[in-house]
Amino acid sequence: MLEQCEGSHAVAKAVALCRPEVICAYPISPQTHIVEGLGELVKSGEITHCEFLNVESEFAALSVAIGSSAAGARSYTATASQGLLYMAEAVYNASGLGLPIVMTVANRAIGAPINIWNDHTDSMSMRDAGWLQIFAETNQEALDLHIQAFKIAEELSLPVMVCMDGFILTHAYERVDIPTQEQVDRFLPAYEPRQVLDPDAPVSIGAMVGPEAFTEVRYLAHVKQMQALDLIPQVAEEFRKEFGRDSGGLIKTYHIEDASTIVIAMGSVLGTIKDTVDELRAQGVSIGVLGITSYRPFPISAIREATAGASRIVVVEKCFAVGIGGIVSRDVRSAVRDRPQTVLTVVAGLGGRPITKASLHTLFEDAIADKLEWMTFLDLDWDVVKRVLEREKATRRSGPIAEGILRDIGVVAAGIA
Image 1 (cartoon, rainbow, N blue to C red):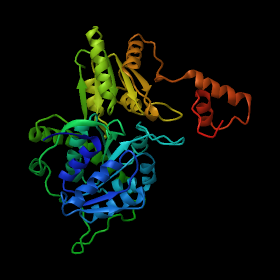
Image 2 (cartoon, one colour):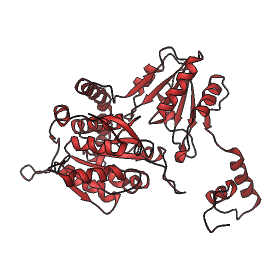
Image 3 (spheres, rainbow, N blue to C red):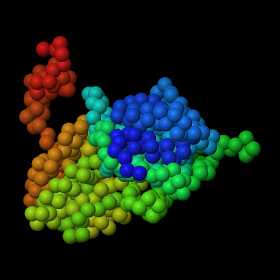
Image 4 (cartoon, rainbow, N blue to C red):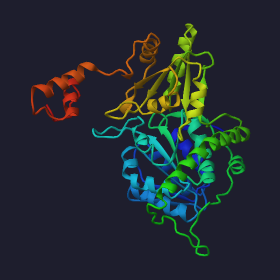
């Protein structure tokens, strides 16, 4: 059924159709509308046989989900930004215990300084925590990926983060196709745990493991991720047959067949990149797009195969590792490590900064003309940066960087002159 609705509410309806048995809710923008929507559906009786728990923190939200999943309940929660960091210990516990929890991460920058807008720093901070991470480009894809996530998580007995850009998707109103309950029931079977706490068959979930077995446990966690490389496309194909649309999978490609330059990115920015590429191709430029849906596990073989004909790869990413550079681009380099392809890192959209077609046009034209450095910060204001560095050089007591920049650009908090 076609419906015009907010991205968060589309996700709430998708989760509801998956018949969750425990929903753990703690509000943090921009995911709050998701759990609010689910709370309303539980209260109205549209979600039955489900316990909706308001908890006291993000750490509690995932801790409760760990307990409920271990007890055999289909479990869901959502978070963002500082909330994901606050539950970090539980994030590792959930994957280490092999519990098939599904969690939405409404991607948002991490402070300090405080910033509530979108980038991918939060989920990237947990990229090695053992969760599957899948990224949505649109609200339709966010809806579809949640339905697939429950099936993938429960087949592998691994937790899944469905990442969607905060505000850009969560608060955007778009037309989405919401499946029927009958469709979802055919696609997603009733939850049958691979492990469960059962008094009649007692086991230890979360046993102490010493040096004699810890390496093997961690290796098998890696094996599960590698199994996901086969399962994710399989589930996407099953989804296409049931629901009649392509959604999910490891990667998605756009005009790459004859492209000498391929742009790689994740999330909602892919739409703007595709529009820019359309305009460049109309001018005769050989350029294409590769979108990464599955970031963990990282689809090395799929990316390697898709980029085989390109001479240049431009990775546009909404995050970077301070002190070293690009995160996604380093993984891409590992996929093409023995090829003479140029892989360029472009850091863009940090803290919600707009990524415009005008900036992308210039960026891609410079890349094709071999004018880019190995790492570029899109639309970085070098004058502001230089003023801060000069101030620090001139005086020991130069003050907080963030405050200095706000003063320099004329954005000063009320009462501070």
